[in-house]
Image (cartoon, rainbow, N blue to C red; front, top):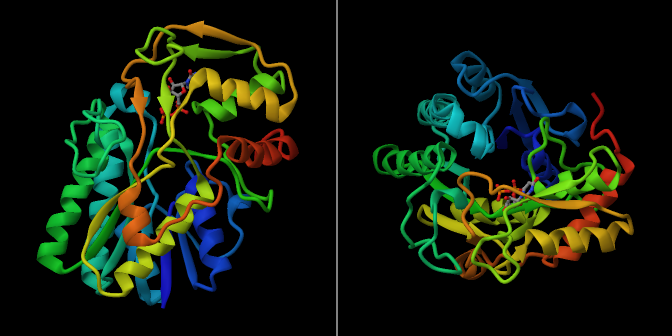
Length: 328
Ligand code: UDP
């Protein structure tokens, strides 16, 4: 029996593939390579195609016995989702619906779904609990929340058991130094700070310093990508043991401001990094910190790389040895 990783050549997906291979699982990858990188794949049986394409899904499900699906195939840029919401609903919602239809038709009973802290919108509590209200402030978060609801109804109707994992800020890179974060365009804080360190851009712009936080800049909960991957495997094992569908936050329960992240990156790289305060970015909540107590208790999840220094060190190790990312 195989685990199908959709979007397995992307940032988090490629770390998932590595985690599964390290744990002796049989891996099948489906990726359309719109954003994925072939060099990010450390193994597995690869199919190139889109989860919205029923023909390729039929091929994958016919040629392999798919026990479970781990679904990372999605668009994930908040700003782009505000400008082009239909792209997000078509790809993120339509894609997962297409995948669920195939799972239903071929009798695959487990799915671990890549969800997000953006499902909460402006949080009502810190740290955020899974039971807090979900009121997304952008189409990206709305698309993921919509899929969570679709998963609930698919469980009721077809018995497809799901685990939705709401990530906070994914960061870092595999300690083997072979895979890391390479987006084009890059919008995420830590890789952009590296670009400033490597003089690929003049400086890092800090989006707003007038938030209600101690230093005025936004606070986020950074979680290592390999710790996210290990949580998916634990979620899969929990489903295999016959447990019910569930939703978990994944974060370290500790927040760092943008200024703090810049400072730690200066320390880790030993390089001069110029920073300048800029306008706020639309749709950014001031503080997003997870309570991951539920994942710790029910999944027995113990993040290994839970200090910001370690997260940035692993990311830097990869970035410094892959100055052009995977190369274009
Ligand atoms: N950020 C920033 N400058 C940048 C990119 C991001 O100040 O060039 C801030 C952003 O406003 C947010 C934090 O860094 O508060 C993390 O942003 P990122 O895009 O990495 O992740 P997000 O929180 O949007 O998932």
